[in-house]
Image (cartoon, rainbow, N blue to C red; front, side):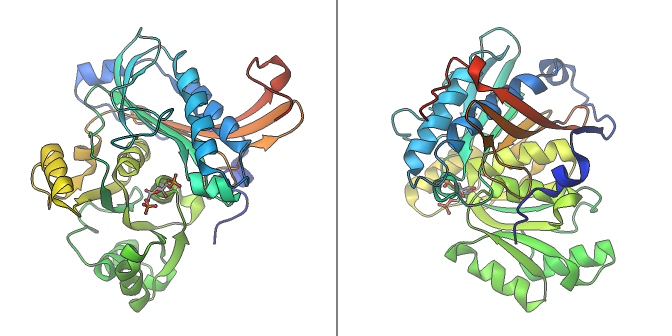
Length: 353
Ligand SMILES: O=P(O)(O)OC[C@H]1O[C@](O)(COP(=O)(O)O)[C@@H](O)[C@@H]1O
């Protein structure tokens, strides 16, 4: 189902699209992201993607994760911000991986929350399969919901769908019918993205009953959610549960694209229930996009392997090429950055690898 080369790049090449302005009416939040950090954050996800791409298909997910994390950590030190990692790492990350609260940036600049998945789809990268990316989100301090390491039910649709059309409060089949009605198209023309997991089987069954088309992804639901905001991908709706941190990162992306999203944290044990209560109060609460990412945000992703959103890294003997999507909510700018890296001038480059 996944196109071998992202349609964004096939059609557009290198371009920058601005879809008008959307200022939050909060000067403090607006000021925090006043400086356009687009190139700075692109360098960060590029560094992670280039490092991960060296491990593509080598069957060692951990090595790929560690390489991506180390490269991202180093690249973050050059970003002019006083940041802290607030979304991404697991509760007890392995040595070498990011830790919650870890400082990010050079300490000079706005105080920002930083969400990271240095390698979104470690398993995918290790298998050399499509859709692995390196992702990062920025928001003013307090602007990314701090979620515990649990699963999150998610539903997302792109811009232009009236609010209330779809909801986690409704059955997936009803959501598909409502979305088709709002768009004035038959349900059979909808394409719904679902993470391929046994826990999402009920969702898949209900969608099939009403005849919606489905694209199942093996991992990487940040891209799955964000795809709904980019018509070129052909994905109309995302439904199903995946990681909660990935849900917040994807929400930052949708904030920039203008889509609709809801999330609900899933509780599987008493410990998770306590953690969810501490984070959001009532565990059954449906979280809106405003709950997940309350104000301005910036999102960047670089392809590691070819996928729905982005082409993967191309590696040559002493050069590389990467493809990065950078968006910010304040201007709704969407930048597709095609970078040629001359590795001979990169002190980190080891020609033996
Ligand atoms: O694999 P699980 O436990 O169902 O978790 C789903 C989450 O894992 C991911 O697929 C990432 O996978 P990796 O751990 O291989 O990077 C996310 O996109 C998704 O939200």
